Amino acid sequence: MKNYLIIGGSSGIGLSLAGLLKVEHNVYATYHTNKVGDDTIRYFYYEAGGKLDTECLPEALDGLVYCPGSILLRPIERLSSQSFVDDFKLQVGGAIDCIQAVLPRLKKSASSSVVLFSTVAVQSGFNFHSMVSASKGAIEGLSRALAAEFAPHIRVNCIAPSLTHTPLAASLLNTNEKMEANAKRHPLRRVGRPEDTANLAAFLLSEKSSWITGQVIHSDGGMSSINV
Image (tube, rainbow, N blue to C red):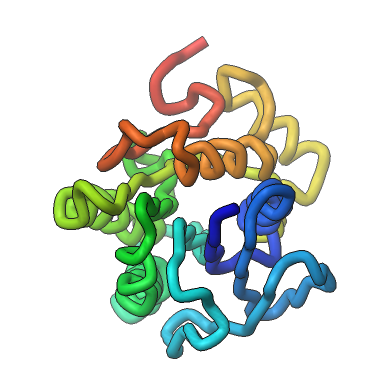
């Protein structure tokens, strides 16, 4: 039985992942606004940019997953430079803070893994995605750099999903027309489900992926690589 920490484990992909892992492992997860009443998962409060309370964590951690993110799609002329800074603090600074906070615990595991999240938009380039692409592009670079720095004892990988049916993307999928239009954009003709990406994250945390590090893996219904 391993010990895993999910930052942002109370909704969306993080919640789905927590549900998968808790069957066989000890799961510690943070919440911000959505506290989950599940006694089988050890939830505690955390706000990105604040200090992560590590006192409730075990001495050794076998995996860390950082899920918090944002999707603000606007033309660049409607975005301030400060909005880019704030988004970077949430998505990149928050990940760095959490990794630094638990690094001693990750080092005490015989084999630990870190999973971060990017977006299909970094590679593909979409209208009005400048802010999220800038932050997630930094996450991809961070993932590769840390994979090199932490090898061979800690693996670091990044998942780049396409649009996924989570609370974060609610405004983009809140009508049947939007769901259908977004489904048609993907070669597999549907929008992503939280469990699609959660299953991949669980694999990257496990020993089954012990030969994989420094990778950006797309979970995007084929959007980044094929046209149908």
